[in-house]
Image 1 (cartoon, helix red, strand yellow):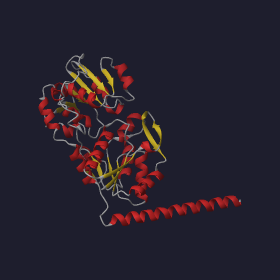
Image 2: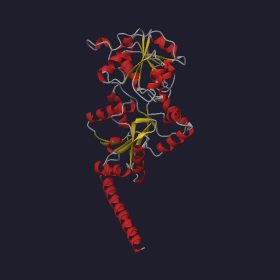
Image 3: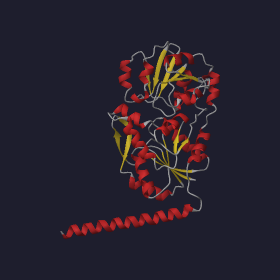
Image 4: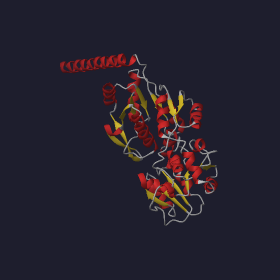
Length: 374
C-alpha cells in the first residue's frame, strides 16, 4: 500500500511518539509498503510555548493538499492533534478522504499541567478531533476503556515493540564500559523527558537506598537538579550509551501518570532491568503478572520489591514484544480504499481540486477588477 502518515512529532524530536512512528515506518517499508511522512520540518515553524524544543508548523493546509495529490495515498493516518494533524484532518474532511488517527499522549492532562485549562476542555477538543476518524488506535486496553468512558468511539488497539538487539542485558553486551561505576548501589534509573507531566518529582522524593539517576532533558531539568542535588542528572543519552544506562541500573522507575504506554518500560525490560510504576495506563497493562516489574500506589515499595526479581525473567518477558508485530497490527487497523475505487477516486480528486482552484482564481480576479473600478 501507499501509506501517508501526518505527524507533529518527528525527528529531531526525541520522545516515545517519534520512536514509535520511526520504527513502525521502518518495519512497514521492510514489509513492502510505500510510506510518505508529512512532518513539521517540511514547513515554517514556531516554537511551542513553554516547550521550545517542539516546533509547530504554520500554513500547512495547502502544502498538505498538494502532497496528497502527488502521492495518492491508499491509506491516511493522522498521528497527532497539533497543526500538521489539524491541517491533514481538514483536507480529509473537505475532500471526503477516509483516515485513521492514534491517541499517543494524554493531551488534556499535559495542557492542564502547563496552563490554567481544565482537562474537560482538553477532552472536548480531543473528542472533536478524533470523531471523524475511521479508527482511533490506542496502545493499551486500559487506555481504550478510559477513552470509551469519555465518549470516544471506533477505538482499536495498537501495541508497541522494543529493539531487543539494542536493549539487552549487560552480560550480552560484550565488554561494556561502566557508565555509573562511581555510584552507590542499588541504582534507580529514570529515562525520559524531564517535564512536569512526567511526574519525575514523585521519584526524586522517594526515600531509597543507593543512587537515583535521571537520563534526559526538558524544561524541568534545571529546576529539579537544583531542588534534588543528591540525584544525578546526566542529560540526554542515545544509542549504545543509552542502552548501557538501562542495562547497568538495578531498577527502572516509571512515575508517570499521563503516558498512554511508556516505551521506556519495554526498553528497560529488554535490558533485564525490572520496572517499578504506579497502577496507571501503561504500567498496569504491561507489568502485573509479568515477573518483570511491580506496580503499587506506594512507589517506594514497588522499587524495593523490584530488587528481588530475576533479571533473566525480565528479559524473557520483553522478548514477547516485537516492532514487526506492532507494525502488522498498525497496518491491519488502517482503512485503505477498496481496490476498484482507488484509481477512480484520485482521478476525481485531481479534477475537483483543479476545478476548485479555477473557481478561486476567478473569484480573486473578479474581486480585483471590482476593486479597480472603485
